[in-house]
Image (cartoon, rainbow, N blue to C red):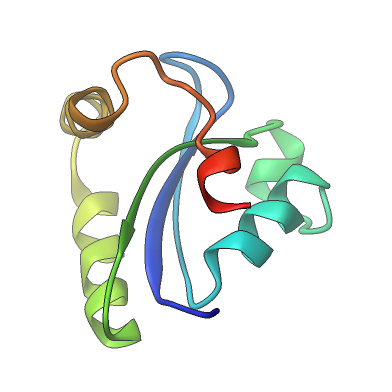
Length: 95
């Protein structure tokens, strides 16, 4: 089932971060994990899903993604650790 989502991937705990938006979280994370998407996440091996938010509307999700992308690193780390203090890979929750 498709549902708009904003997500943050990490290379490891406190590692490189990537923020994205999608209409199909499971498919998109699978693409990142299998390096089917050329670009930042493939180049820097950023594959661990550490945070996600589900939204009702894709426009709302896009606005939220842009907001998170403007945050400084400390704010991103804080939001990740509030929901996922152990930096577990959340892939199993959505697969």
